[in-house]
Amino acid sequence: MARLVAFLLLLSPGLLAQSLRDSFVIDQSKPFAYLVFDHIGPRKPAGKGGGSEGLWLRVVNNCRIPLVLRASSAPEGEPGSTLEDEVVPVEPMLQILSDSELAAAEQEDRDRERALKQKPSGYEFEVSGVLHVQPGKDALFSVPLNHVGKFWFMRIKFALDVGRSSVAVGPFTYLDFHDYDIPKKR
Image 1 (tube, rainbow, N blue to C red):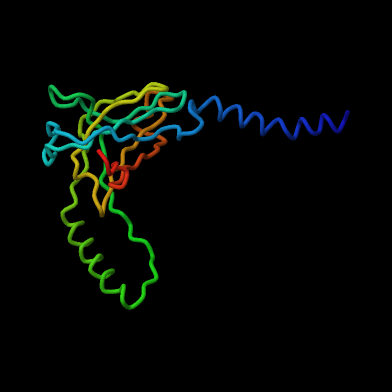
Image 2 (tube, rainbow, N blue to C red):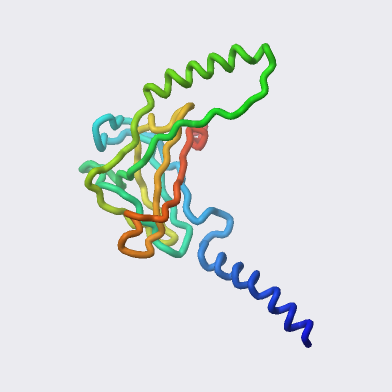
């Protein structure tokens, strides 16, 4: 009997953790929040520097707590929202190269430096609202297509909606979207 009690005591924290995880995530095969490509298409620019061709994405809430994101209304007549995003440079990876590959790598470095001088800025809002994404739901938004590229990617931040100040103080989680996340067949 003592062995059974000891076994159950050892097993119970694992069962509790599994139960909490199962109750937090809705679809166990996916992350608790993620971005999904919707389409590439025309859009009304939401701010200066915003392009007229957009990358349309959905932020998906796959957990049982609402998500909160900094957002502003989409331009009149546009679907979805405009989310605050950041355009982040891709960090080059360490590579071991042969002499024959070195010239191509050096050219790639020069191309990167040139491209990063033209990197667009993300959307930042001085006055913004919030967008709540309820459990099991998604929200459509767009950013200019040039917010992703070979040398940079787009990032949005969000918080779990656990109180009035979540969007202001976090803790924050980040969702990234790269050019390789765009399906080749559209």
